Length: 143
Image (cartoon, helix red, strand yellow):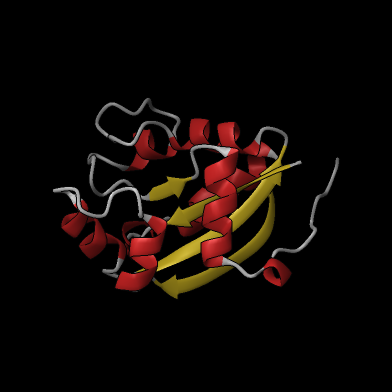
């Protein structure tokens, strides 16, 4: 089973869509292995978005991710990274297809509701930023 990180960003929490998004992930068959609500600090944002620090858009990105609580999750399932990325849709909600999370709930490239790791390597790095190993529980359930 593959694992990946998901962040339900401040606009998801603010707009009360967390339950809907978690439900979509579970209905697809993904297993929640870890979940917590937290405030992302500037330091945590810099670790998570390390490849973007120094870019012109980074200050706005940092302001957005630190603007309110996020829900961090680790989910698992077959090809979890690809499955979650398909469920979330393209970053820009304007072009995201209906049926995807961003296609159904976002009209923005910046306020895009959800983060999903883009590879197994990124998922491993990002999970370690948000969760200690003992916080990720073996909940793999098969039907």
